[in-house]
Image (cartoon, rainbow, N blue to C red):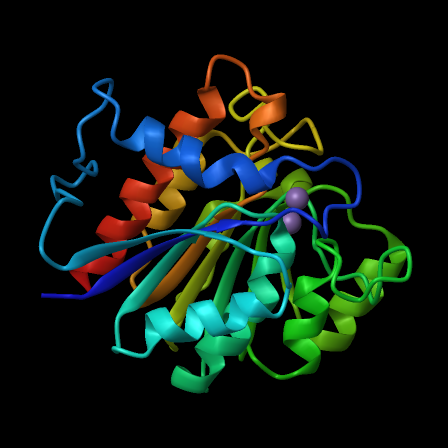
Length: 260
Ligand code: MN
Ligand code: MN
């Protein structure tokens, strides 16, 4: 049986606009285990099985501790799902994954490309993780979906790093490539339209529907070895809508990791 660990990351100090994602893990868990939904993914797999180990939530004080925590949870050869935190968490997570998966592809779902060389002077801002990942060579292929805020600097960065961007303005989900290498999925909750996920710091209308993202994940044929769900900001949520969507995506991502 596939072994998968879950880690919650309480961290939002690299948010540029509003903090809040440090509170996400507790509320995603609360939604996931509430009596409102069962623990089955749509393909009939229960995430409550002996392969899945929840390592709990980690309050992060030092950004670079995220790499060590992640390393601990990968050391047993398990796959890993992380939730909570702003998007800056993905760089130290991928740094740890690189030790285990020297050839890794990344599918990144987001309203933003997060490719800034630095943001307001900080190279580790939540606006920068994919610039750091690509300049270190931690991903063979980076494919971004849902982008709708591309400026000239980030377009140049994308060209420089060879990033494949599927922007919202001309999105065709049948054009998403098949991945050959082990795949990591990074899901920024603001990739969804704010109508589906109001609990994010950066409302960017014109985004993906819940159904589109679920189908995108369900249609992946590659082996998914890790994933994160980031940027859920409970302070901005409405009736826990975004918590429930993050919980739903937790189930779908875990189920995808379990079957292959
Ligand atoms: Mn992001
Ligand atoms: Mn974003």
